[in-house]
Image (cartoon, rainbow, N blue to C red; front, side, top):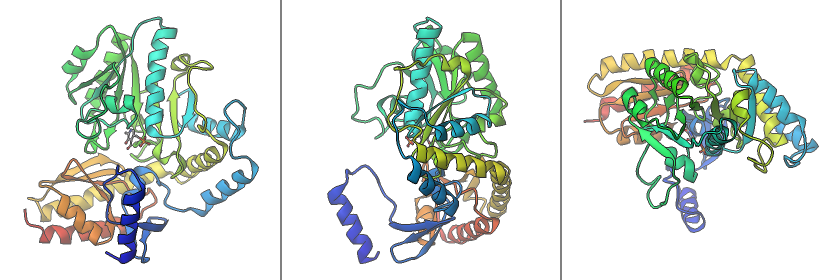
Length: 402
Ligand SMILES: Cc1ncc(COP(=O)(O)O)c(C=O)c1O
């Protein structure tokens, strides 16, 4: 480790709250699918800021849009009308069956908004005292008090934050009877991710999703889909719920929306949108002009360059490559997970040493649930980069003993 790096670690520990277990890498710049450390060493990025910089890093076209809009209008308060926000809303609504949008600043804030909308819709539109949100085990919905309570995981995410808000129930994944049993007279919504990213790149089976949709209809409750990680072409459709042919009452977006600038959104049907009225929900920065202009350009590029198809094709390519690796290392690779470029390689053993060796070989990815290498590269990554990843992993697996 260089002296410069050591100095940064020391400086940070004196300055910042100790909330992150950081990887041993200080990034000084990034371009395309590459990150560069303090010494200019190049890393291949299979993480893209965890599904954020989906169009690659430091793009000139997005920088130009950002600079142009910043010279005209940066912020004007949501007390006023402004068009960049509407341009973006029009584009996003053209990608799905939702009828209305609320813009905010992060994934957790979008989920918080979705929860508030579901509760308020039940109280004010349906005149029913329904407020409970049912979520799934191993889900991840954010770090605000409500969204961490909604999150179906224990550990440091919840530890020490009592009392947690009321009105959240978590049920075992994949168990329809448990879900049916959890629905009561106070249930407002079921909230799911189509693929649990943090929870181990776990796809919700189609039959399970159909049962969830049916349960929502039977019981007059709303379906909320958290697309914070899965949205914007990541899984091979613009929105992951489109793989299932379903129309959620409410779904949320964030991460890739502005390719690295902080933005979130709550998208909903016209009916669900009736739950909000002036004064019921707001945010100072949501839908700011600069971020909206950048996000509009992101949506344009994603559609023009057919990023969904690209994600799907590259995901299939990666799957085939892993199959070859599994044939060589049948005792070490369990299989693949996910779809498109929300991709997991499941190992049969604790993957910490493999992950560390990848980092040492200048490949950045992430280890989740102890055994799953999560690959969420920019959607602009090339087949040759995937091949490089697999070759390096092959060598590491040769050496690692289990
Ligand atoms: C599915 C999902 N929901 C919500 C969040 C929270 O988003 P944010 O960190 O922007 O608040 C995340 C973040 O990883 C996520 O993956």
